[in-house]
Length: 256
Image 1 (cartoon, helix red, strand yellow):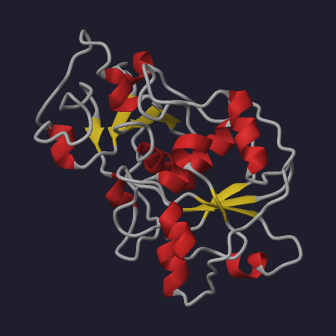
Image 2 (cartoon, rainbow, N blue to C red):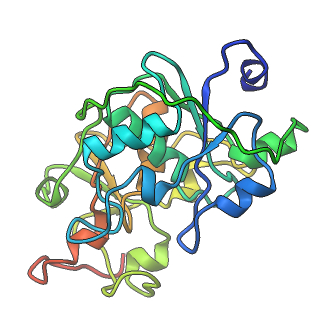
């Protein structure tokens, strides 16, 4: 379906959000991308600067509006985002989807399976960089639920941890200076949201108010997306672990 839309007279705005912790996706974009896709830098375009709010905090609405307009996002025009895909999702496309919806942009979709699925289907790619016309979107924050550390620590709520099990258990911590997890959080690694082809699959939806976190609020967006597709609204603790540990008085749990 997306292949037909890309070839249509009014294609959606396509954002390539390939990203990993080690590097952004500029080199991957230059090597090949969907026709008409614009590269969106997760760090610079869609998040605020790292600091007290965590490694990937919410952007200032005015800065986000400027970035989105530069990417060609238009009012009332559909947006499709994608990342590398695969069976170990980074959550980059999900975080882009979440950020745009938080910004009040409703018609945003994620390419299921990402770039890997597009290639597997034998669909065309290009190395020509896109030069979008400046968009006119207006950012109106509040379109998606956000949890602070207070809601995340509330024992009456369900908090899901999207990191891999060794990080959840506190056995390793390759990124942040403190290992462990938020007390009471349940482990649900983001990899469990996709099947062996990297396509989104249902996850067990907990009852009651539910939210998700990870290291910095990127991978956790994958859980929010998976639950959203099942009709379950979930909040994102944007600051996540990288924000939680900025206060040494906050408790840290380890093990299962």
